[in-house]
Amino acid sequence: MPNITMWHVRLVSAAIIVGTLFLVSPGIGGAATGLFQTAPSLGTAASFAVLGGSTVTNTGSSVVTGDLGLSPGTSVTGFPPGSVVSGTIHAADALASQAQDAVTTAYNSLGSQACTSDLTGQNLGGLTLTPGVYCFSSSAQLTGALTLNAQGNAAAVFIFKIGSTLTTASGSSVLITNSGSSCNVFWQVGSSATLGTTTAFQGNILAVTSITLNNGANVIGRTLARGGAVTMDTNTISAAACGVPPAATATPTATATLIPATATAITAATATAITAATATAIATLPPATRTAVTAATATAVSAVQTPGPRCIGNIRGRKVDSAGVGLSGWTIELRQGDQVVRSAVTDGNGNFDVLGLDMGAYAVREVSQTGWTSHGPDRFDVRLGTCGENLTGYTFVNARAVESVTATAVATVVAATSTPAVRFPTSLPRTGGGFPGAALFALLLGGLALIGSLALRRIRE
Image (cartoon, rainbow, N blue to C red):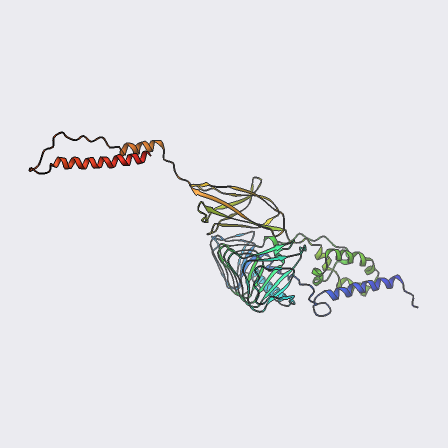
């Protein structure tokens, strides 16, 4: 019987670990198994909330949080009145060109991932989906609400591969529940994407041709068009939730260089277990084997130790007059204590959306305007407590102020409309032996006096 030493046990343990990584990691030692969908790297495009190919145009007070870019086209119009927050406009510069290259790479990465479910012909509205790769051989339609349930995994990835167009109906929405993030939702669109009015959308849209956001449509994520235009109309597009995360904590020397492709396949608990179980074994392996094992296992542990994206939510509401008609151009502020942390302006239908908010308590207040009086609460105290939460239904009601008629004005009106008593003569001269002319005049005065008296009584009533 051969003499089995501790060195043999450690070598076998390391071999088992490396073999496991080969089995679960797409692209290592063979074809992908399709067990894990992975979020592609956006590279230079990660800082862009909007990126167009031919043109970027805007109408109205759109707000873009993140960089706005265009390449190879050169025409960016509508800024102002639109604004870019926490970012810069890059029109046909080197960074925009590099971002387009990065989008193409990410688009192809999405295309290479195997479908876990074919939804061709189904409307996304009303569905609740768990992490996976969902495919449409042609177009995809969203009417109503689509719920993406991350099942408690902040790193859960949702991929939608759409053969041609993506279209949403007015008022549709994408909701992310149970710790998921819009940063890990990807829409690979084979031609163009069109978001209907007041759509509340989440995720990264990577379209071959164009992306159109109709009036009031909002996106938490990114709109990245490879070849065509990005067209906006009073929209909010925010990539703030997908900002660069803090630097990762340094990992032990024994596991300093892991394979990037395995990062999403290994949970934090598994990474910790691998580190503890193999650090000693790897250190005692022969130099050549130790190098191979180290090279075959390291960026995954580093990746799972990197903090995930921020947990955010949204607050939505409406501003109307006393008849329920939406009022545009009103400012709504969100306060924490005495500080205004965010604000929004109501759109043409009176709707306001404040997107990408950190968890916590907020006071939602309207900014009053001259000539209007409040007919309801001018403040709502709300709290965001769940990732992806959408708080809605906060309605501010105002009516135009009516100037009161003062007592002096009433007295002036009464005095101006009072008619003195009419005295009739005792004898009326006749003209030409016919009906007395003075009598006709007196009759006319009497009629006018009666009308004036009735009008005065009506005023006093």
